[in-house]
Image (tube, rainbow over all chains, first blue to last red; front, side, top):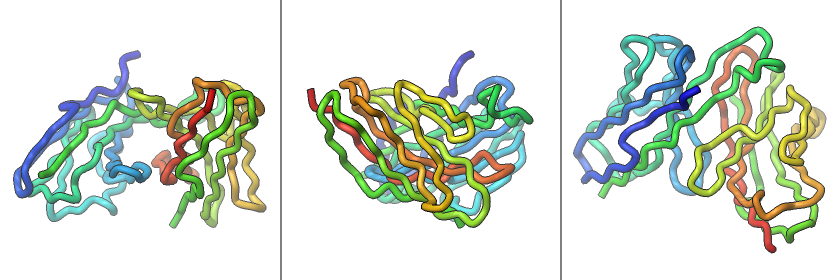
Length: 120
Length: 109
């Protein structure tokens, strides 16, 4: 199966500019996640979608970050305006729920390659 | 709220020596624990999960609820084990992961 696709892979912007990241999950995966990984830290969940609905956005800085998944497939994460502390790798992941996680290997997140953002 | 702690940021081990990467968690309910690995220039990927009770690439991890730990072990380290390892936790009914800060494992030839 094709993996989780993300673009762009790298982006350099100046503070106060805007940026958008795109994610295409694995076909058939209903759940999509955006994580932020700052250098030296573990990934931190920003937002979780189930189909096109938001399940959890409690750690999303809503004054500057927004995300959407309009048709329940692709998703876009936007930052406007960017701050220096937004420099990080933005990881997209997807998963599918099943009643038999042990045998199927489901309920496991598959990650994309990430989008590295540098804010100057 | 759940929390995952990996006390070692860096760990160096000689090839052939045993490896143990520590992971402790805090969560009041029944957690599901995972180890994810990121090799150089590769994506973050699942290594193993406690529910499967299997050995992957020679690695095993046992969930110890009394000590709230999920340490990753391998009896004989190999050079290809050099990577960044993340312990992660999810809760019943929700696959979202809470990650630790990671341990960079370096195997010395």
